[in-house]
Length: 363
Ligand code: DP6
Image 1: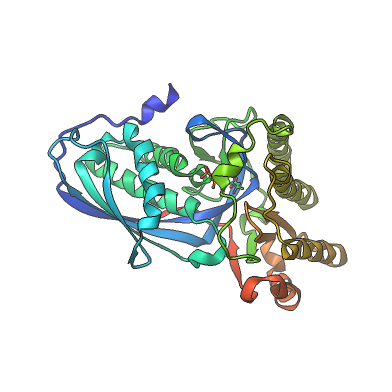
Image 2 (image 1 turned 180 degrees about the vertical axis):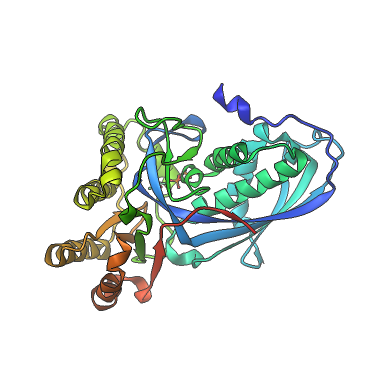
């Protein structure tokens, strides 16, 4: 079992208490993860831009409760989110701890307090599970590092991504920047279903400071969670073709990233976004996360591209918000376009300016 390398040997630990803090960004998938097997194994490889401004900062406070790590099978913890104790966040974190326990049995010796905040409003429709789970996984790894000081950086980040994946699949792509691949792909050496790796090939300069302006169409809670959506890919009539398409899109992107072919890039990225939503619309039961304003924005982006020749395009995650992607040299004109023509479609006129980032940071 390849997961074996991540099992920490149990030890009598000398640490009484401590605190670690990490900040981790969100990411936006260009090739989408949609569909998974048991144990958070993706049905197809995915690839994402790591973001810079949308991030979660998490402090993990820990106190030893037992001398050796054998007493409890359940981790005891509290969650404080943006200054308030949050019972409603506990089940997801409890699931995370349960899933990582076989790989981090030392956790049983401690009681935790998870103190977290987002740089973006919680009710923005932006999923915080990627940034939140990766920040928490990194905190766990810092604790592991103080127990096992010999851990090297390479293993530290690989296991952080592995643990983050067990919390939320896309979170494993939020540890590092700027372009991350998760899932085995025959043309990408060392790619793995178990964790994300930095995209290993050449990336043309135009992609290195790409912008992502997130147009907040609907800030409400999603009616269908990603986890439910992933599960609806089991038995989906188009699943096999979709998974193959993701492999093909990744192959096609390799020369595109190298040569900076923006027209070809746009075709793949928009097709990925629309295919993701087409899968939702053709699931059983079917569901629809895009809203009329999502479509209005897409049409506006197409018009803008046609008339200005600016290589601006869109992608979507599992919601109604639109991520508008474009090179930094077009920033001024695109932000004018947002103010003049797109804010009317955003809830309360809200949007977030983000760009490609370098990944997580220890604070
Ligand atoms: C549409 O990572 O949120 O954003 O593993 O169940 O937590 P879980 O799902 P999640 O799914 C993300 C789906 C997506 C596409 C993507 O980010 O690749």
